[in-house]
Image (cartoon, rainbow, N blue to C red):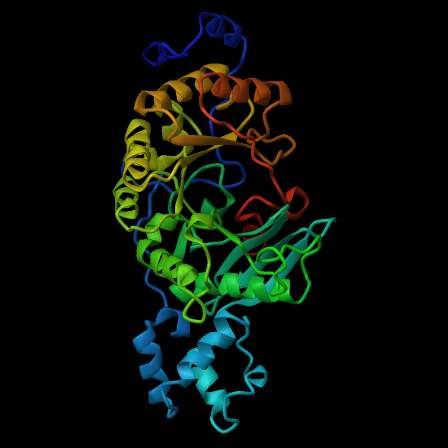
Length: 416
């Protein structure tokens, strides 16, 4: 353990106990990281220029929707009918829109609800309570979303970019770099399609209704921006999509902002911008290591904004919004799961204050023979115990979809 990482949070017994534990270094397996001219892992913040997807209802403001309807030769009030079909009944099928006049109906729908996602593949867990969708975009790019039923909620993990430019060595999404940003409507369409699947009874498990004695159809209750891409690198489109998610039906999806989680690997200026939005989102920082020496290798963006800078930004988010921050931490055997790292993480979080943060250790989906494999159970338990003993609320994340290439990007990488 480097001497500069010894902090008051470390116990004397930790050093001797940990001495026998190896330190595995991060490395890519089966692919090579793209490097910049200085030899460092390449970071892509700007989206490559590609053909844009067709303009969709969800890309437009309320006024623009009305104007577009009029351009297509219909009275402006038809916009509300279209919004009701899309945001409330989750359909883009003109045959289902019998309240629209037959003459010109297909042209109107084609002009405002063009197809955005084509289902290329679907995998379902044995229990049927998790579905992973592989979507093909208009230009052939592949993205994924995962629909999961939990007791009392239905969560959809959505993608915000095709590929990713953050170049993290353990992430399947980053293998081929950033293809392009997804449009606002492409992000929203993932939710609409998931809601349509729910309405059709395609997700197994006991139904979750909207409230006591409610009989309305099931729909997605929670969104996590933890699919493909770095959400804060596609900031405007992600936030436009969030505004549609929280807008009351039929203008949007009528979701609770508190049930929407936006994650980042640590784009500090964008975190501060997010805190100023005035939308009570849940914010998650994907940290994965509390020390710069390791995080520089695991999360290349750490070369721009160091651990303490990222944690400071997360704390500012809490101060501005009053919303408790989540720290995501993938536990990887002999790489980042050492007890002294739990102590160091607790120390750094407690330095900022108490009651502002919650840590979610995530057991990595194990891959036989890989350096990227799950921590042993006793090591995981010790890591969690040390954080809890230090007063940091810590909950081991329930993982889903191991048998269906649950880690984000695995399916797209296999089909690319």
